Length: 260
Image (cartoon, rainbow, N blue to C red; front, side, top):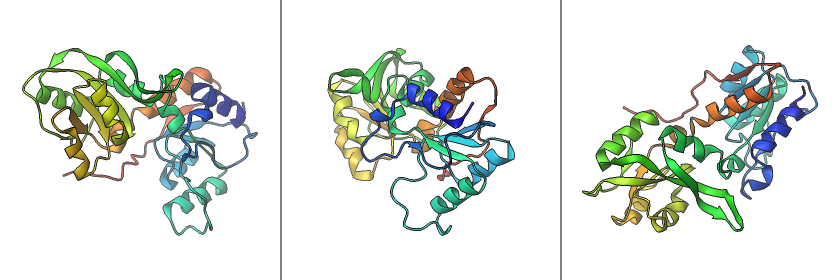
């Protein structure tokens, strides 16, 4: 099996045409025709993760986040991005990113969050025009209604979040939950229009929390925390597709944020 075989399987999971215009999903470094010795999956393609892949005999790293978003004018190792690219090329470990295209498919990142929270009757929150199964975010319902604070505690536990930042809680039970892995503030109006009780996402700024206006609970659980189960999604998918080599999850925790 070559890297190109793996790429074809990943593109079947999430077609690159569904990535956003600003994104850089796809093969970023190294020859796609090289035989695969093993695959490592991660959320981020840092130098430390690349060295973890090398140590474990993997010559392909599939990450959710692309290490290169925009053009590099030099590759001298002065930034963490340049050091990752250099390590990839030096050790011949191909970097492949499956980012917003995996966000935008119905069986992708947001489906995995919904599964973790046990949501039912799920659907795309903001579908693309004429494509109900492609789009941003997801919305579904809890197995049974919960008190808002009880849900936030449940959310923190299920998503292994160090902290949950949230807006004012209503007195009544909640049942309908909207989710968006990563930075999802652009979907708040869609979540309100869909009559979601809670919008679970990440990367909210202080003034953006005011936009809830007591119409919805915004629950910010952190970027890494919201997307961490994407690693499991990718490992399970690739393991089912390829049995001739190992598909491993990185042992490196790439979350740059810590909590007291």
